[in-house]
Image (tube, rainbow, N blue to C red):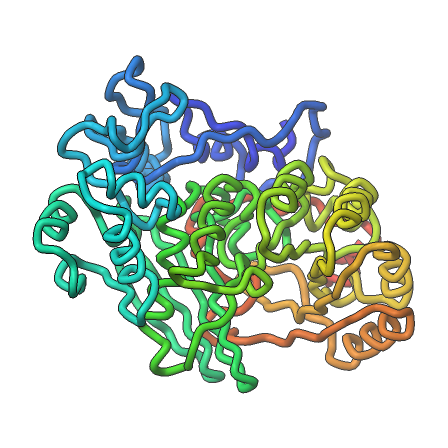
Length: 466
């Protein structure tokens, strides 16, 4: 079985996703062939108190012969008797939830939010007031006591039936350039990281995570070493932005931009990401501009098409190579969705989007993808696609095989692209002294995704010999 697939397998009830990958050595360097079957059909994991199953299953636990090193991941797969999400497949709505359940409010879009409030006998106007206290008016409430001005009976109902908080603050690390890395603990004990990046031009960006770990196994990314632990819920994604505004707006100014470029592949968790993005841009709440909420992908083509059809937010595609040979190695997803297929899909889809440009991200790896020939190929690859290109300095991390391209090489590469008519920017490291820079988030632990075999022509560039 291809190792790239083992970190992206379908997850079935009764199977721990990590236990599949653990069957292979983390030191594996060779790679068998891919089997010809569809990749991405996933069951999304929620924290234990938020998981629900059709009632025919009954309460149960998902178990397997999980190694002890995976105990923290395995523990999140316990299913409680009382859950707080309706079973939509059986026609259930918020009015049919079991008594005593608590709904995590930040996991609801406004239509669901209003329906839930009305199901408890309160008016739509009260739903709007509550929504604004969670997301607007500089309140960003985290508990019932902060809900000033609400009806006493309404607050009592909320205390009995609603949960306002999805994350627990664990730590805030400040880098020398002012970048903040926020560590959040989840209810199952896992930890995610969120980064807030101030800019002297009046723009501050929060970089949110969409998964604990990542299944894509991109070879230059530290998060990819973790493998996938689980998806984040919409509430866990949204609350990262809420917390960032609540904690840091006074220090760094207004947080204006959101990028889904933290831990995880957003389109692998497409349902929750689209929903979270919808909540982020709601005009009555956090009110981020859709143009300033950017969702990045390594190239999951079916989910990319769905995103372009369903979301008004911006799209970024992590490209990082100009040939299939190199991209197959450094980004295994390319073995399923080749460069030509990915780029042709973008050409076709963007014909129907007005004033829309995709952002191509290109991490510069010394001796791997930074040659003059690469720059010229990149110009040809993006022809006919309305786009901008970000050249990103590679950020080293423990166990990394790669080195960053020199500033001079990046400038030369940038100039060739500009002369070829591309809109191109250079993005240098922010927060790297606190492991907060692009590609540095997460904590892999003792069991890691495999490093893939290095093509012979690049072994010298990586000082591996021949």
